[in-house]
Length: 354
Image 1: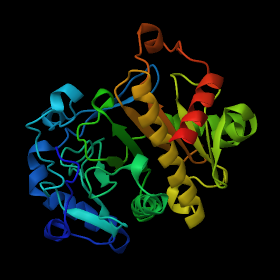
Image 2: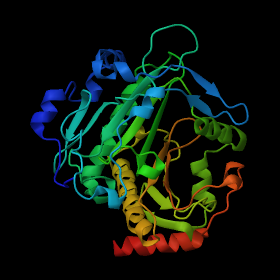
Image 3: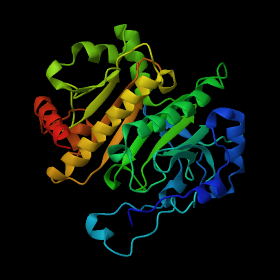
């Protein structure tokens, strides 16, 4: 696969349905989902269950087993590589697009949705599943793009969050979950850099945990981290946010980015300066992961989780796949192969070098 691949403007115009996500309503988005014929063979079951031990929610969609995967081991990627379907515009209609210094960032509907605006009665799992493509250029993502461009990407993500959460106020509980999977080992199916945005009526366990933490402690986890995490575990301060290694690090090089204004709970509440600070934190955390993982003999693979809403304040977890989980970890007893102080020192050194 050539690194020069990208979606061009002509392809964008062919599948662009909405230029600016903030100009349409959630009801219009629902209509666009239901009109997307490509998705008809990949809809979720609409059922969900909760693990009685911890409240984990399980959603069911057998068709996701048929998703295309283009992540390969380096040895497998030599010659004969497939062209990127996203660069070629072989995807669903685009509902937001914004220019960058090179190319553009855009949001579309996930062809293999975890949640879908299903019709019917009962306790159905309903919602919408979006993808945000960091750049139209195949070889660009958070770790190698200019911070000013990344602040635009973050602002468009915030715009989608705003539309989804504010258009249906008073119509029952709905949640916006934002994640990034990079790499085959952690669930990343496509190499072209992207984020997933899930909107629906099923509460993830971490949302419930954050809410319970605030109710029990009388403060958010971000309040606690900013006060209690040791100073020598701080990585970088961006003014409005700080990147740190949590003292309770579970795997080597886990990081958190914490927004300092703990009264803010969503991306769309952030100012332009705060969005830039968050974008810079994502940039630094991901480029460190891309630098450190090969140096320890690991394939580059990581997850990013956005913690927003009830009880969270606003913080982000960067979870590189630096250590497999065994039976003890499944029991909730984590054995970390590195101490947090060493991790913080390694990360700071890598940031200076890269």
